[in-house]
Amino acid sequence: MTPDVETMNPLVLWRRISPTDFRAMNGSASPHGRGGGAMHIALGVRTDAFPIDDFLNARGQTEVIISAGADRNRTRVAHLAFSGNPRRRGGEWRIRDQYSSRHPAWATTAGFPTVYDPSNPPYILIFRFGKSFHARFSLERRILALRAAERPKGISSVHTGIGVAPPAFVVSFHVPGPSRFDEFLIQQEEERGDAFDPKNISDGRKRIIAAVIRRLGQRAFRRKLISAYAAQCAMTQCKTLWVLEAAHITPYRGMKTNAVSNGLLLRADIHTLFDLALISIEPKKFVVKVSKLLEGSEYEALDGRGPALPSKTALHPSAAALEYHYRFFHP
Figure 1 (spheres, rainbow, N blue to C red):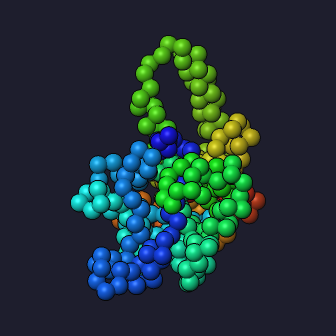
Figure 2 (cartoon, helix red, strand yellow):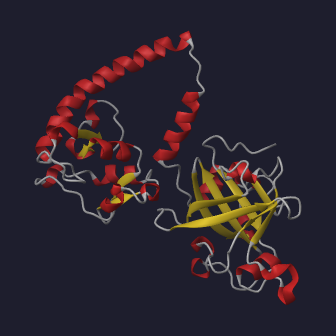
Figure 3 (spheres, rainbow, N blue to C red):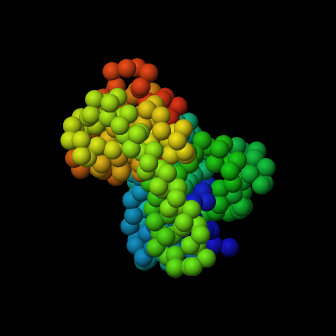
């Protein structure tokens, strides 16, 4: 069965590293000129069982670069370059340049072996959660130590594959869940395809009533935040009152979430980016973090800044709320 690459189900691409791959990753592939000495990891030809172009969101393309996190907190993110050559072995795909530009998740400092052991070969793993990618590695014995139901189907018998990653497998490699921006993109795609259905009218009425209640509470919430933050944006220090909005750190779930400690006063555009978790506050260092998706924009200048906080400590953002939001940050 072709893996479902269009949903939020976590997927994983695996490659059991061969001796040739291992030599390539250590700068000694294809000695004596055979094969050109390219330092790449071969993956294989695209098939219905191995839909790599769909996995990479690159249907119809032969070159694609993705960003993949290397740790559970998304603090280390690096590029991976893939190519599929239609003139090579029927269209073989590969991960390029894993000698001089090896991904940090597969570095020796991350524990990747320096000597190849055929009885316990390394695997490279690339997880996909929505639109986000995360790289990991494992030795074969660690994978086989998991129960069959806790492993992707075929990972012990097929050297390269793509499959659904069971929850236990995801947890065992400390892969974070999808970012809020991932959720937004997928929900947006789903809504584009929704046709009008009169049966949904009652659900629509409920949403309207809920929105009215939320708006009424939002006015009081905004007044509290304007007072607490001295009428300036917590991230830009903008003082134009007309564009300052009350942002919830954790999602609105009734009037109890309209606490000042669960809010930030933000300029309207920053509010949108904060809701999408393209901008967040790193809870330990307490600095603003800006997604690489905003690289080159004026928002990039906010990265690393400390937010402007209320003068009263009791009105500062809740640490638990900030930790919750940062879990969904898109690096």
